[in-house]
Amino acid sequence: MNIALKIAYDGTELSGWQIQTNGRTAQGEIERALESAFGAWARVTGSGRTDAGVHAAGQVCNFALADGIKISPERIADALNTFLPPDVRVLESAAAPEEFDACRSAKKKTYRYSVYFSRRENPLLERYAVRFGDSPDFARMAECARLLEGEHDFAAFSSTGSSVKTTVRTVYSVEISSWAGEYAEGVLGAHIEVCGSGFLYNMVRIMAGALLDCGAGKLPLSAVEKALCTGERDLLGKTMPAKGLTLLSVEYGFPLFIRPQ
Image (cartoon, rainbow, N blue to C red; front, top):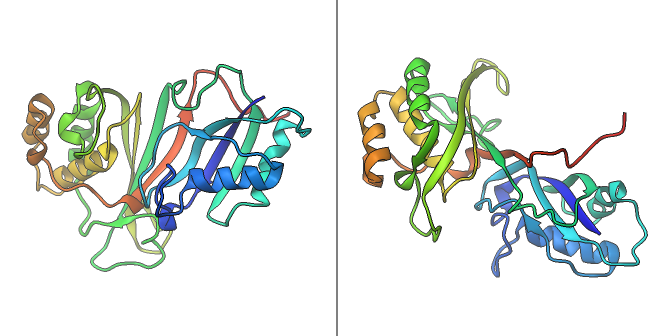
């Protein structure tokens, strides 16, 4: 039986999603839990990789449940959570179509990048957000966001190390929202949510940096336009730290996890 899982994890102490020889990963923890729970190893396929330090609220993966294991698909989440560490949890489990592949079947992914604006670090925010200093011009950030929407060659928004066949991607939306006192009284921050067909290596983190630099007056909109046209990475600022990034959700064009009414 093909089983789909929705996973959440705190990436602070993980070496990303994909199994590594020298670090603890979300995929590795899920596969170990499967073997402990059901006595049979199974390869888990994720919707995509997240880097070391990146979090997930709605990572999706699938695996083949061995024949003869008698458990309802919905209870697999509880069975696995018994053997998982505190920073990795299965939120939902369900039977999936046999042809379903969490990676190849994905239609849209949404990431959130979180920042807060302060002269000094706040320990209540540092685990899941990045300090950026002074508050930027949100209207200018919105102008930059509109430039990034649509189908573009995002070569300038990718770090080296990627072996993809094409750097053309479609970004459906870039939404910027501010928050005040949401996590710490008197602190202003922002969420940058990016929904797209797929993303290049470090693409969202570079996009977040460009948006924030535009808002801070450090990067002209013309530089972002030129970067999209030429693919020149040097036109843009630094890649933002991993800890501010969270994979929020993955969409497949049909509901995978249907909760009973």
